[in-house]
Length: 425
Image (cartoon, rainbow, N blue to C red; front, side, top):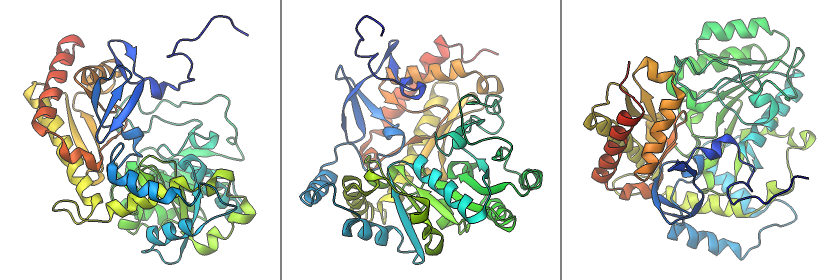
């Protein structure tokens, strides 16, 4: 055993993704969230566009959400099996899909793994075609691209996570559909003919193509005998009640919905045709905490709030789309104010439930160090968002002072341009 004591910043075994947020060179630890803001251990507030990487959709410590949630807690947090609350939630979630059933999980990585198992049981084949980031379990991430990079980014195509991963190889191929061209998909289907059982698509990548292309992709894969899975972890319950696949009638066999369902409580659902989900018992698609009730209570509370009109919007999902669109516009305007609009801006993603930074300069697109320097400058003016990944908004962000956000972002863009040499080249 090693000697010496650990500091407060060393005790937690971080992945690099949790080390992104720094100020004055120091990793941030957070102590509180309030509506659309968070505070660090020193009490410094930040406008939060990370939202726990997407799960928080109403806001931190929202009084109405907390009141509804607390009202449920008197029923207990763990009963012998599934409950009337699980049934009520699925009835509300899947009301527009009367032939579907749902399986409960804590994380979407579990739900995607469950989909892979169902696909293998249905088809007798273990191979997978994937497009996008679909979870952190071995076959989901091994030999994976940097999927959140723009399609033409030089940082996108280097394979990662090539060591220590199970469930990949000649008999269990995991192929990447990279360019979203139907011709490329047809080539993959032909190359791995007879070995592929599942096609899984990250709904975020729908922002780089069209519903018609995806409908054709789903149809091609089903014709080739693959089970099709649309991974709505980021989008389901955020861009709309059910997400992109349902809204655009893509026809996937299974959808995975997660993150935003329960305003931060861990919940993910695998939904599909009742006959297919009937395999869940034989496939052992469950676990002790799949039946835990706090997350379902939180999901019911979230649904109670989002189903109601908000301002002029007919429901919370519509209002969130408006907020994300306005947020992206504020960052784009700030870049113009700072004179860096030729380098960087922002765009709403899939209607505005998410937004992301966009890079207009080829050199900058391939320079991770300069891009990450922008995150640090934004944190320095009290703004937390994601780079190389979509950022998220919540209902509480409707109270943002848009002029203040634009001014803070302008200051960050100017400081970045001066200190990181963003304008060079």
